[in-house]
Length: 111
Image 1 (cartoon, rainbow, N blue to C red):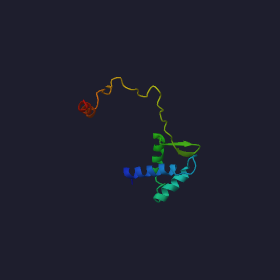
Image 2 (image 1 turned 120 degrees about the horizontal axis):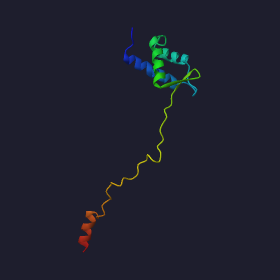
Image 3 (image 1 turned 45 degrees about the vertical axis):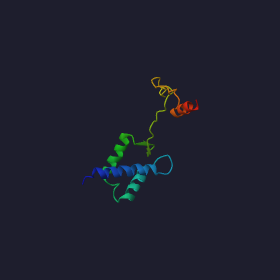
Image 4 (image 1 turned 90 degrees about the vertical axis):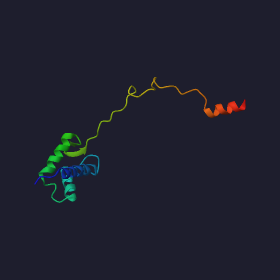
């Protein structure tokens, strides 16, 4: 019996959760992922779809396998260069130099 897409998404989230909840930054083994999945739903780790989901996570780059352990692949964040920072636009209108209307009214009354 095939697993629905909602079930696949749930398994995928659980696999990512198993890797993030692993102790230490060295990653988790396949046995740890299987044990985590079985704790969520009995017999889930023995299904063929779980292996396909795991391989799909590796292909898409969400997980990475290093030294036989699975880790979350860290995204490379772009650091903004000095050139990419926006400077003040010369097209902006300068602030008006006219006085506040209430100040003008006070000056007229003073005269």
